Image 1 (cartoon, rainbow, N blue to C red):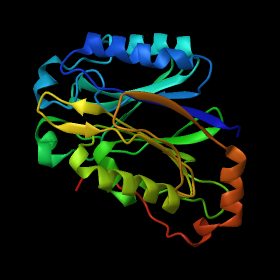
Image 2: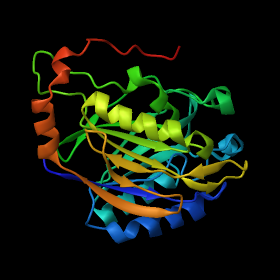
Image 3: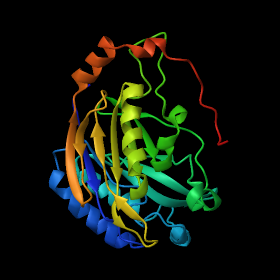
Image 4: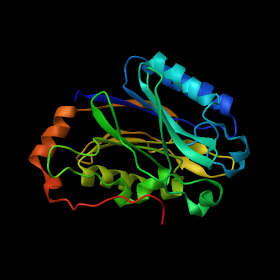
Length: 269
């Protein structure tokens, strides 16, 4: 593992304006070309968190993936964020992950936010995924997933004590300002309890439903200390997660050796 540079792109997402959002987020991200490994955009960054945008949800052949592929090549970094994607199984809140060579992977949000009726209009993902990029194991998750510690929980190979499910827990969100204390507290907890780094991007501004967002995008090390802590304004910042410090902490404080074994079952509920 080498050190990993993660850029948080915290924007004021335009309501129901995919073309405008793609243009805006590209401009925010371009200054980090060649200076970052991962560029993180918010949840539903093309539309805002809107049930009313479902009718215009694109499919995997729509315009956003080619746009992300072009941006990833330009930045020489993986680009990630979630988009409303229509499939034969319904519309998913899908976190897209696009690498500089054009490779596309995705995670479908499993925990749908029933307080905004997301569970009535979206299809739920079934599985957590992890993948490797530039020597790091990464677990992508979306917004409300943060409230479910079992789903977020790092698992450890007891037969190979140095092997973890992931090194970086990556969140994208539209997390409203009235619940910002929960957002900030849970992000720190997830880093500490999982012996892992956390990067999380939330949006700012007020959406078309008059819901305000405070940003609070953060990069947090394995000790729960903030490396980046953004304010309530559109901002771009890059954190460097030190690989050697992560490995040293896991060796010095091997709590994983006492962790409970468990299995994540498919499905919700």
